[in-house]
Length: 286
Image (cartoon, rainbow, N blue to C red; front, side, top):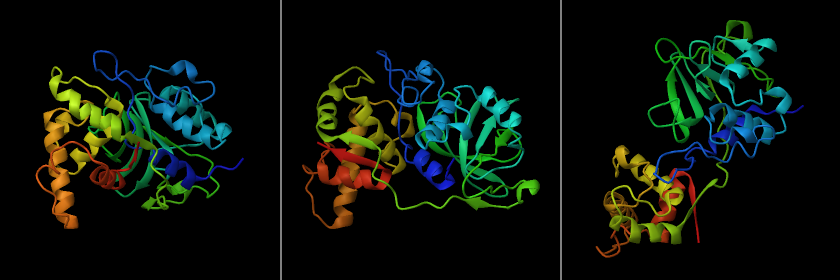
């Protein structure tokens, strides 16, 4: 059965910036698209989904027999050990597991060096929580506090690349990043504009279209224009207005467009929003 490391890692990385849903109170609720899309894991909707995310990627590539299709990190660790495909060293494209016996959290290693692993993870956040809100790219230590319990060793078409001396002992490695695919995260301009018009008049944290606002907030925070404290609330409030206005001014100045103050008022427009999306991985629709 074919299973490409490059295709797998690229698929998971394409989901960076995706966020789970919120309940009526505005809290993240573990409702996401990976559970219903993975045969046999539909029941896991609403539960912690880091392991489901890694299983979804294998399922999408028709490699169910080569990856543990489970929502449980602990069960996945036992699967790798039973298959005798387990290591205490980083494995390129392989899963890492956190916790005393690997029960707490899982992600996938897309690069590593002597001190760190570079990972793509579901159900985490910018701080690396085991119970987060979306898909993030993270950097974690190889040794000491916060380091993995161990790693699975997938059977990739390209062979195994690992720091494990028994598996080649490659000191550092990374998965080649191909030309980026079309962004998987889509933002509706009309919904974003509706949120920009309505959210400032709602109670603190009130939202209109949080799924469309979230990727924009994350991008504005990454650009250094919005505090991370407000980068995941899904509300297009006054702080997001101000951050967007600053982005519009920055874009206009960089392109020499000479936009006026009314052009840079913080209400999203297609040109500057599309530029932000190209830089931070979301596509602008309708």
